[in-house]
Structures are given as C-alpha cells and as structure tokens.
Length: 500
Ligand SMILES: Nc1ncnc2c1ncn2[C@@H]1O[C@H](COP(=O)(O)OP(=O)(O)OP(=O)(O)O)[C@@H](O)[C@H]1O
Ligand SMILES: [Mg+2]
Image (cartoon, rainbow, N blue to C red; front, side):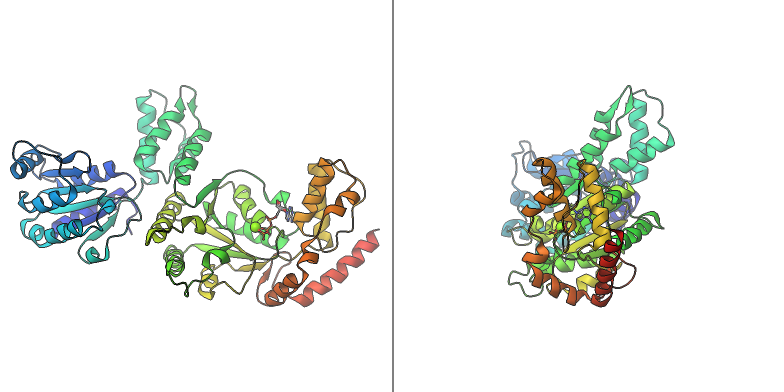
C-alpha cells in the first residue's frame, strides 16, 4: 500500500525504470501529483520532456525540453486539440517524453479515446515515453484498458507532510513556532485534506492571535462532506446522556480508551436497507458495494459492531455518543446516498468515501452499524464486524428510571411518573419533551404516547426470539437470552414495588 508521498514517488520511479508506457494516477490534487511525478522522472535536471494536455488549454510543454517536443508535433500554430487528436499525434513525441492527460475519465469510454490510449502502449514501450492519465480518487478504467494501464493512487499528505506545511505557514506569517500540542491538534484537524485545501484552510485559520482550531475543523468538515454520502458530526451528547445500556457503554469505553484506539467512528445507519438484495439484485450494484466494503474492512483490519433492536432503543444514540465521549469525530456513512444511477458510479463513490475515511482516520476507524432486522443481513457482513453484534432490548425498570432522570433534569420537570411499562427511551424522552412544551403534568403528557411495544408487539417479540442466545446484550454482561430477560423483568418489578 502507498502510504506516503515518498512511497508514491518511489512507485512512479519504479514504473519509469521498467518502462511502463501507460499509467493512471488517481489523486485529490492533480497539481501536486503532476509536480511529484515530474520530480521523480526528471532525474537529470530538465532533460525529460514533460508535456501536459487538458480540455481547455490543449497540449503544452511543461518544461524547457517539453516545449520543443510539442512544437515538433504541432508545428508553429498549435490549435487546441481534443483528446482523440492528441492521442493520435502522441506517437510522434520525442523519446522519453512524459505526457500527462488531465481528467481523461470524462471521455475515456469513447471509442477513439480508448483506442488512442491503447495504441500508445507498444509505441511508448518502444520509445520510452510514458502516458500519465491524471484522474480523481476512485475512478475506474474502462475494462478494455484495465490490463494495460498501471494504476497508482497518490496518497493524501501524511501527518509529517502536514506538520511541515504548518511550520512553513507559521514561518511565512512571521509567527512564532506553535507548541507541540497545538501542532498535533492542527495536524489532526488537517489530516485527510489534499495539499491545496490544507494550505488554504491553514492560511484562513491563522491570524496574529494564533491558530483557530475550530475554523480548521470546520474547513475539514466541509471538505469531507463534499464526498457524496459522508457527513461529519462533532461534539454532541456523550454516554452520560444515555440511561441504561451499561454493557455496551462499558465495552465501547474500553475500545475507545484501549490500545490502537480508533481516531474516527464511522456510523452506518440501517445497514440492512443498504444491503438488502445483495447477491440477488439484477443490476449487481448492491452486490458490488457489499463486496467492496467488506474487502476494504478486511484489508484495513477495521473493527466494527452491529447494533440490533427495536426502534427507539438508543442504537443510534449510543453510536453517535461514542465519538463525542472519546472526543473524536463521527462520520455518518450513508450507503444509499452513494448509490448512483450511473453504471459503475456507485462503486466509484463508495471507494472515494472509503478513501476519505482511510485518510482522516490514520487507518484507525471503528465501524458501528445499526439494524432493525436480522434476516436481511448477509452473514459475511456480520462476520466482518468483528467486535460483535449487540442486541438493544426495550429498557427495563431500572434503566427507564435512569432515562427519566436524564430528561427530567434536562427540561426541569418533576412530579409523579406515568406507567412506563414497555416504553423505549425514545418514548420517555418524547413524553418529557411534550410535558415541557405543552406545560402538562407527565401523566397527562403520557396519554399522547403510543409505545412501539404495543403498536409493534409481534415484531419486537420475534426480534427477541431471533436474538436470544445469538447476540450480546447491550444492557447486561454476556449473551442476551429471553429467559434472562424474563427473570430480570420479574426482579425489576419487585424492586420497583419494594421501593414504593
Ligand atoms: N437509553 C436512552 N437514554 C437516553 N435517551 C434515549 C435512550 N434511548 C433512546 N433515547 C433517545 O430517543 C431518541 C431515539 O433514539 P435512537 O435514535 O437512538 O433510537 P434507535 O434505536 O436508533 O431507533 P431506530 O431503530 O428507530 O433508528 C434519541 O433522541 C435518544 O436520545
Ligand atoms: Mg436509529
């Protein structure tokens, strides 16, 4: 895997050394990719002709030896050439020339472009030239070219690169070098940005008063959210604002504070919907996406958990609070927003999103997926979520008490509590909120609540049966079983009465 700019340059050099004629470079920052490649191939200063083509400017020499190379194939007046024309003429470029094409992915499915690229393979191999297709992250070559073009991903700037950039920016602003802690925090906020936006974000967040870390983060949030399907959550509620769910909270705390602690939480809500039909869908889109995601998680050794349970049982709330509790961002990963109507578009979006996660997590992400039903979840998906599947049942008496306490305090309410048998945390919250908004006693506000345990009693019972003996309990240590639950319910009722 290419992890640093050095690796990338070494890879380009190696490709050049063995005379690779066709290369596709996927990069978030074309200018830096071209600069890096130019430096890597141009060992004897300035002797390698470098030529760049783009849709607007046409073909141009990039260095002193590139200019005559262009003049030689075009003559004096150089019209702006289209991609097919340029590929048709390219075989006349001087030996050793490196020709960059910018954004060829926009047209490389066209027959003349596709053929033009392929035709250069043997000619360039012979003459030592190299064609570099400069494309955005996640783009995929047409099948006709996949065996002949070598794909290299340019990594985003590493922590060390960003630290350098930070120091250089401080220096040029004539500010004193920031201390170690500020440097670390600033690098954390910048990691995952391409070189250009990182530079801009830094420049904008820097004033005589120093560095505004909040602004830096804001810029990164915007950059991440440019990727379809990704949203960043920061701050918000922590585990202290969730009543009950003690087992999962304890487990997650240990993961978040333990060895190789994750630096980003990736939250996939209602994963069963995104993967429903995987393996059987006609278009193959979902099957492909499932495969891409699973192999990504496996390759990266990414850990994950699945939360299963009825609606309103705090599955999403726990997932969201995990990031805030550990002081790390949570990224909502919306697979349906990545599903594109274009063939191949979905895979491209998913890969681009995964690359962003890779970049901003330093390779340490914790995946949390929520799910309302078990049957539609492919087993290979569950296996990949290595930290286990937790079942979130309706809260028991003691847990409900803890939840009431949270919301009574939040809305400054008091008075006797309604009968909350079978209520979820969401319903308790809703009852408390209504009592506050409508200025009602809690028992009256409760008359406007229809608990899911009543409206969807059968579904909940069947979910429990399926979960029994198979999944970990979110509330108590160990595996969830219907028997243990019944015992706890009975015990809970007793304590409740005893306390009265
Ligand atoms: N145990 C709890 N403590 C505090 N708040 C809770 C608890 N359970 C639920 N809530 C509140 O209820 C609301 C809904 O909960 P949440 O979104 O986590 O449910 P969910 O299990 O994800 O349900 P769904 O399956 O419908 O997505 C949230 O605002 C959350 O804060
Ligand atoms: Mg939810």
